[in-house]
View 1 (cartoon, rainbow, N blue to C red):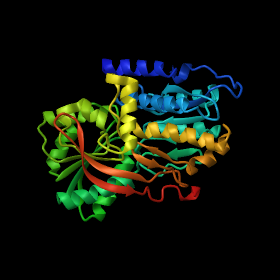
View 2 (view 1 turned 180 degrees about the horizontal axis):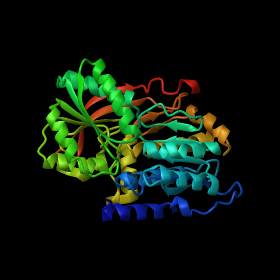
View 3 (view 1 turned 90 degrees about the vertical axis):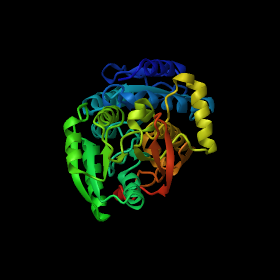
View 4 (view 1 turned 120 degrees about the vertical axis):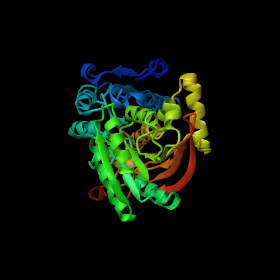
Length: 397
């Protein structure tokens, strides 16, 4: 579903920092090389499939981070080189991508914004070579492994403050859920149901749709029959929000809609169909911090009119590449054990604030609530403050 500008931005961006765009199945082995050779970082992302709407922005964010790192002298006196792999937004593609990255190209680390299905398939492959992996997507929580680190938000950081806000501000007592039918949708949906019940409210309908389905008609009819006060959607990033909001508008539904799947770029793409949707996120472009202003200026300077709108899925990717570089520098080598030990000890002051992954391999995040306007832009309507991820992986601490 990429339009021409997205495709041209992707091609331009890859050329701007010398990235090698490689489908995982056909990537070539990298020579071990000497100390002057670039440090390879693998970037798996859904160039095709559900995440294809978001992927060009993820690639741009990765490129910008690599350029900044290299212009500042690189890491350990060496340049960073990114290799992009299409995980096809799912398990089969991720297996190929991670195999190519770790076994053929022998990357030093992996930084990826991916679906849960892709992460679940790829992470064990990375674990076989002890490859450090920073996962940058919002997800369902409690993914724990010695080589896996996460700077995306978890349900305790999005669902908890959202349900509290809804109760205090609109007094809703009847909730309905629409979710993509995979681990993120199912597990986050189950968590939402628990939080809603704890708040004294009820879930009157829970509807799931395959991640690659574009037909929401039956589900929306069922939601309308349940007569909820609010609807919460939990969707894979990108395409599902585009198709859902279009059909939602066509059916004339006016129930308040809160989303755990939409982002600023997708909302901008959707435009008026997304108007009124509210969603929690750890980043919005409206932040007036010096770091965000510098980031937006750098993105504009690098990509001009082809720059993709940064959002809660692309900014953690940008920050994740910087965090990986800082960890390699602190480790003093590309030895994976040293890098894994260093990751929880480094922080990066980025567009979303200061980000540091903790000993349980997750990060406290500043969370906000945004509302989509008629033109597709998003304005922040509330500030949830710094929110802890809670106890995600206690056995790792």
